[in-house]
Amino acid sequence: MLHGRHILLIMSGGIAAYKAQLLIRLIQRAGGTVQAILTESATEFVSPLTVSALSGRPALTELFDLTQESEIGHIELSRSADLIVVAPATANLLAKLAHGLADDLASTCLLATDTPIMAAPAMNVRMWEAAATRRNMTVLRDDGVIVVGPDEGDMACGEYGPGRMAEPEAILEAIEAHFQGADGAKPLAGRHVIVTSGPTREPIDPVRYISNASSGKQGTAIAEALAAQGARVSFVTGPAEYANPRGCEVIRVTTAREMDAAVGAALPADVAVFCAAVADWHVTNPAQIKIKKDSGGNPPLLDFAPNPDILKRIAALEPGGRPELVIGFAAETGDLEARAREKFAAKGCDWLLANDVSAERGVFGGDATEIVFFDASGHTSWGAMAKTAVAQRLAQKIAAHFR
Ligand code: C5P
Image (tube, rainbow, N blue to C red; front, top):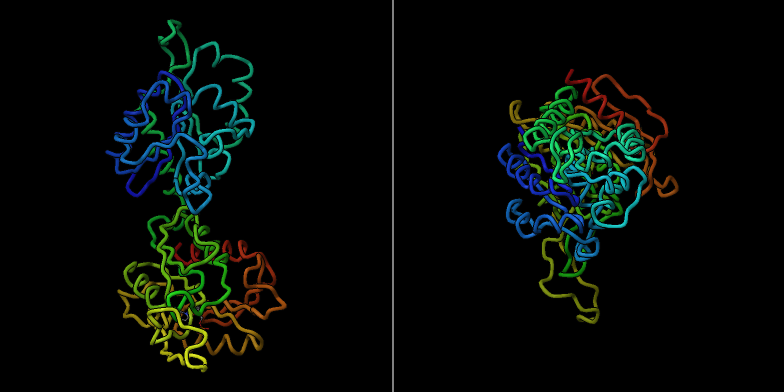
């Protein structure tokens, strides 16, 4: 039920933390993976070592442990998860979440994400019934936090009433129901989409390369929009500033030939969107050592060979191997319509999104663009819009195609 699902499990400090360890096993048995975070007080109840051993990944405890990561660690942590489960969720952590406090790794991850959050409260009955907790729970429910439990029963402190953490089996059921509900109704559920994004880099010598200014913003926005429609997205990206779309499998490549191979390996797919700004040529004789400025007084001679045209190759695949929808982009500097029409014919794709990337328009690296959309029936201007809006519109068109 949870195959391919990655859960960020945040354990806060309560006696129920020992039960949350069973939840790790249950999620794994259902096919999911777990990354655990323990608040400082959770470590009083369970050992990070045990949790690491159970989850198969180092349990994280400290905000500043993450500095070795190239990405901003906590943002990456919470973004890479399909769901964040807080179990047990203490009154204190729930209060922090309700008020947006971020003073440790757990609360920072919760604040730094728009991944859905599920919380299994666990606390003393008086704390659960306190006016402040009730207020906080109303806020959290309004914010979209899915609340599981608490159960009623004998408490570790000797009292009786609501406040016991829901049983791990019940939390697992809620997790499974969440994913079923989240995906079942979505128009692209069960569809596989490949998105290429960013620039490619073609080496000249070990330290120099030929590339372009593609930021990866448009590709990232498209991948996220498609994932939000329920598609499984393989995101093949060159070295770009924006290369971490939420909810997608990210495949990082450097050169055009690597991108071509990665796209081939990701097939079969229902849809392929070619958003990458692929270098047309690569240097056939990249130097093995850094080329020296004074090497004979002459500038170095570089030999070039054409790169594979990935879009063209995939569009030309036989039916059965060819994605049902092959979508290309055209970045032109002037004479947009005529050039895009030629490109649409030459590439053999089903749809083409053309935009003018002349420097004064600030499309490369910017947040907005102006698309002219081509398909077999002609072309339509979408007007100026945010790249995220382009992504939404394209994702909706793809969804409509499969309906
Ligand atoms: O020929 P041009 O580079 O203008 O074509 C742009 C479209 O083709 C984009 O969709 C781009 O991702 C794709 N492309 C590709 N492989 C190449 C060159 C372009 O997939 N080698």
